[in-house]
Image 1 (cartoon, one colour):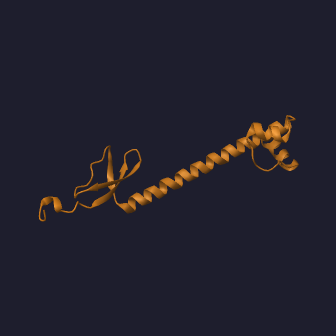
Image 2 (cartoon, rainbow, N blue to C red):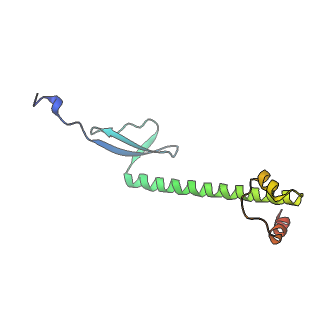
Image 3 (cartoon, rainbow, N blue to C red):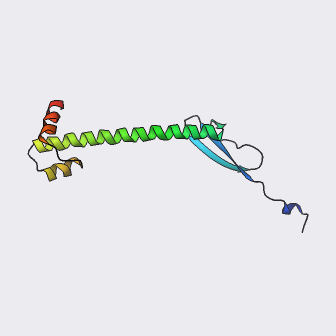
Length: 116
């Protein structure tokens, strides 16, 4: 019936942002006027602070992944070069090393010999 308490609109959801003690970030949506209770130690932050922390975390992760990929490529190249020096065919050396880069020139093989 009109005028009943059931006719009141539901409270609008609000979003809060958190940073936890372990560095994890969280986005929490709640209804009502009270801020959320965090499930583990941390603190609520502004959306601007959350976004800055997220951007920083993403940049650090991207840099770490790029370094891991570069290290893996260097390791594959070294294995590829060593397998070629051992007399294996290029196709076999590629298969065993996982190296997908360009074929080695004589100059690159000499540099690899000097460095490793």
